[in-house]
Each structure stands twice: as structure tokens, then as C-alpha cells.
Image (tube, rainbow, N blue to C red; front, side):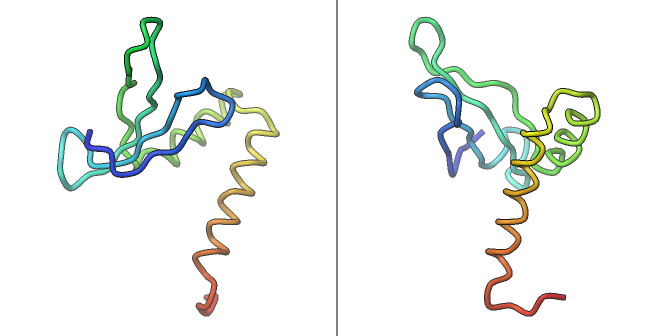
Length: 93
């Protein structure tokens, strides 16, 4: 993966972050990775998740009980905030 943007993980360890960028399998696809420091302090990264699979992954985790109601409420609020920001100055369909 070639990361183009990253953000610290809230509630994670000090150096944990989410990475978004060009996937390792195609320059046309994008993906998400989780990165952390291992026990020896080296940078480690998990497997990539294609960005197009993220909605299904979140819904799957929610339906199977892996997300709490509080976590789901944060997701909904965050999405509403992002949608509202993207619509500023534009007519709402």
C-alpha cells in the first residue's frame, strides 16, 4: 500500500494509526490499513481492506454484535457530519 493520508487511532496506543491510499494490488483501487508498533517497537501493519468493502465490513460487524450501540451511534453521527459538510453551499437533492 502507498499511504496518502493517515490519522491517529482514538483509544489506541500512542502510535496507532489508520492509513488510506493506493492499494498494493492495483493503482486504480484504494485501501485502508491499521498500523501499530510491535513489542520491539517496529512499525507493523495489518492486511488491507479495499475501501469499496468498508460499508459491508462495518454492517457485518454491527449485525454480528461486534460493535456496541455507542460505537454505531458514533459512526452514524460521523457520517451525518461528513455529509453535511460536503453539502455546504450546494443544493440538497
